[in-house]
Length: 298
Image (cartoon, rainbow, N blue to C red; front, side):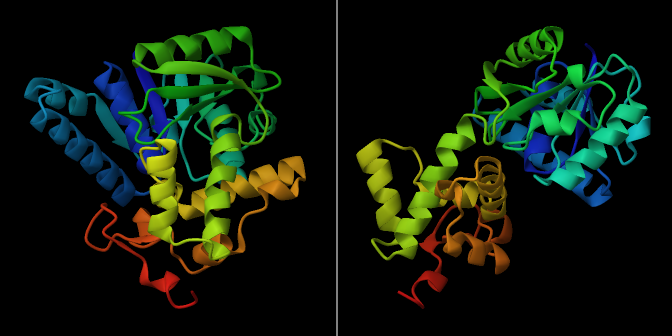
């Protein structure tokens, strides 16, 4: 496989493009927004320069990686002769179904269509295509260039051939692929999101403050990052979307999102991406202080 296509130049999309390009693949990065593409490529360049400054990448390797990435605003111009397309758009069912219909109509019949969804049913996504046997989940972890895990999620009709190819390609990236079946939240988020939601509920019920909750989990459970800070890093809107998928899929109240999470998303407090979540990121990506909004009602 020489060329892969990544749809979506946001955090996950540019991370996936970076990882494939650094591993020697030609990458066509697609987004409807020219601005998003420019920002995505700029993020890749910044991350490569950071790796170079740490001595884990040479200047030649950095330049070669960037040289393997091409940007497109039209999917039809990006997908000639590709064996794999990875969709990494927003975690929204209607949007993903629309994209997969387009991918199916435009891509060669042998092309595998993968989605980076973190919770949405692979089987449901595959149902809008004429090739459900070639639709599969590739759930990368954020930040993609650093995190080793890839959940390979088999839909009801995903073929063994499709699974085997994607499994091997993931290993070619230096990742550790794990086979997972198609149920809401898969494995990673089925376990992670209830923990994050419970941490938000603990704050909502005034059991302890933001820093106190995160400190307990970091020092008491050896987590590298507290659950509230991790929620900010993931994006509170993404956390809410995943919990809603699991709540709808399982019909179980234990997956119901905390009212505090719902209100924060409504208020636009989404974490790092908006500059404020449980912490204040107005000075950059580092969590400097607990957001002042939590003290008004406590």
